Length: 542
Image 1: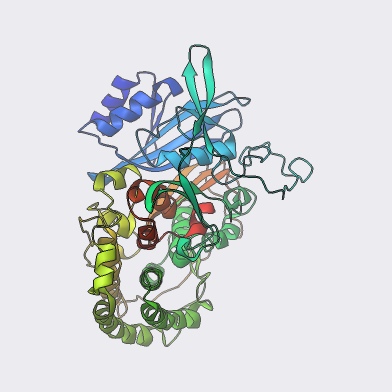
Image 2: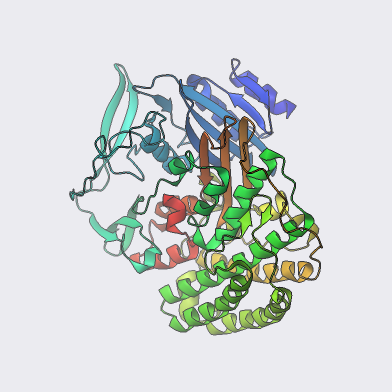
């Protein structure tokens, strides 16, 4: 990291470097873009993957925190911070032209904190309506009904994006036309089965060819991160189950690890193995539902029935141990809620060969079907460079040649004790994404095979203090969820509640790239492409 420090100080001499859990660099706003460009493009550093962009109300000022890594070595991580002291009219430079993932992330920060990013091409609210009064993640936000009355009036959506640019007379506001005058704009969603949730695509068409997609989120925004600021850490746990509900157990696992590391809580080996087994069962159920719904989107109803049939077997296993099927509420700080059901190991061992046979059946049923082949091969191609720019991870990123499996790169829980292959393809199309999930089911079965007879004895949960207070500081945990990298960022001031909590959504990255990969495709292809991306909308809206 010494060469990286020298690069930072050569680019931004006034930067403040701190050795924390990760090297943390604080720079003035005027130095941000030069430093971001240098870090991304320098061959020695290549911090080309912007994991997360988080806005924080620090009290006296606002800060924006950029958590980044390098696709050359994803164990190498860096935190860059910048700030603005103007609470009335906070502005910062955009990095959306440096990392594509900032396009939606900066819009999120603007909507919740009111920070305008100069040079961003589309500075509209992402989750809240344009008529929302105030900025909810500010500490002085007035959430009373009187200050922000519920507005149920229907207003037409704007056909303009908002941007602020630096001009001769200071910062100037401009409006940019979203669509051309002769565009035929088709509304897909927010209530549409092919969007896999309450998501709205305004799709500009030339005949049946897609010219542009305007993504509109927030239809089921619940203010989870704001609510977390008033809850204790055990109380926050249940929110993670309602993000990507198909990765509920894995999301909850991430928050538990983050809190346990910060609080110095050491869980038992038994807990680590149980959590890993449950993670992989969760991954299989998620990929099964993804396969089933994608096939159904393309007209194969039988495949949907088969996928749901086999997923039910894992749901039954979950229910016996956790009491839940879709939402397990099983991971807790310090371990798991209850020990394994006496029949758990026998049923998991019986499921492994059963599922292997069904995978063969899936391929016979649909993979080689001429309609499936024509609708998936060469459709919705996502290049590796674009996947990196938009921070796309998981099976979708790996289908574009990006090695990004955190279970391999930064093993946590029992992943360092097992052998499995990282499934990487290079075609980047719908077929590669489709095959990746089926192959990952096979690897999950292989992991289960290695662990199911190697569950250590011991306590399934250690005792913790009645009230958990995290030491003052910043904590970040990354895990490999079913749709890619899920992250938890906690900023603590030493209280029993977090000062700021941020969830890094893998689905948000998947949706952010839809406009790019759908342009030039036919509108019928949008259904296939969306199914292959496998985003979950509550994970985006939060």
